[in-house]
Image (tube, rainbow, N blue to C red; front, side):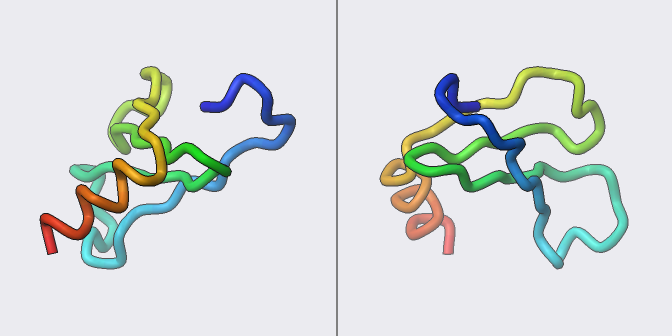
Length: 61
């Protein structure tokens, strides 16, 4: 996600997802938020600025 980070991101998914694979996973890492497909974790993740992710979450709630 971040080219300057030495640690691996901690990916998580919503508790509403239960054990299904049809969801996304999110990782919070400094100024970026990563989003990836839980069905194919080998695909590249999308990265968003934390402020953009926060605005998105406010709108969907």
